[in-house]
Image (cartoon, rainbow, N blue to C red; front, top):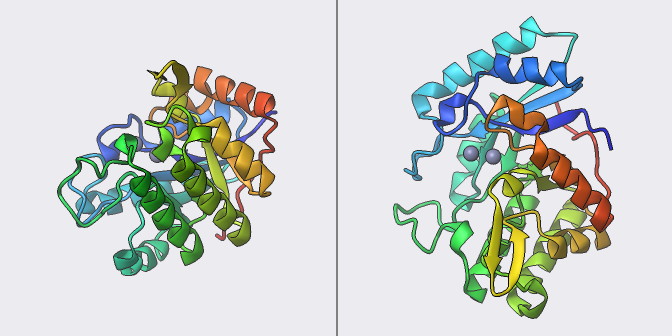
Length: 265
Ligand SMILES: [Zn+2]
Ligand SMILES: [Zn+2]
């Protein structure tokens, strides 16, 4: 598998990534990439987690992408995007952003976007069955909203669940998301950054934060489109040990990967 694309690339403006657009493009060219999509964390009116760009940096981001795209025109196709949470209250925001960029990636890091309380709301910490199903409901609604080009780390909500096969709510949530994605034709992302986050050892099991086999076997069974992303937070992430490990898992689990994302531009 020799994938020459990545549609989940960050930018230093989100305050926890390194590198400008040109830094990533130079690395992508070195690797022989044909397409590079930037999807840095969009600013938010309601989430004050300090892990996304500020509103006043939005034009700085767009100018950096546009300047870089024209400088490297003909050598690599560059797409402009954002990674953003879904809320039914935010359709105006998605319409506004889609006037400026080519695509939005759904990155659901919180259950409730209109709150300042992050505890119990942060999708890395979900344990209760009802919260797993709530996550799946939000993601399903987002998939059918038509705003998103793909779902970033769709299995992020399973990181506290060592034995997915014994958890009926987790299985129900996986089914909801994979069936919706298959029906709507919205790709699910096999995200290498969950490998960089390391291995979780819990209740005698060891697994990466994500990707999770039980999720992707079900996605494959339902005929979902699946893309591989670096979720690069520094230029070297475009091809690192986590990408190699993700490719090894894809082979081992028998997952089919789409190399290119269908983006209007
Ligand atoms: Zn990030
Ligand atoms: Zn990301």
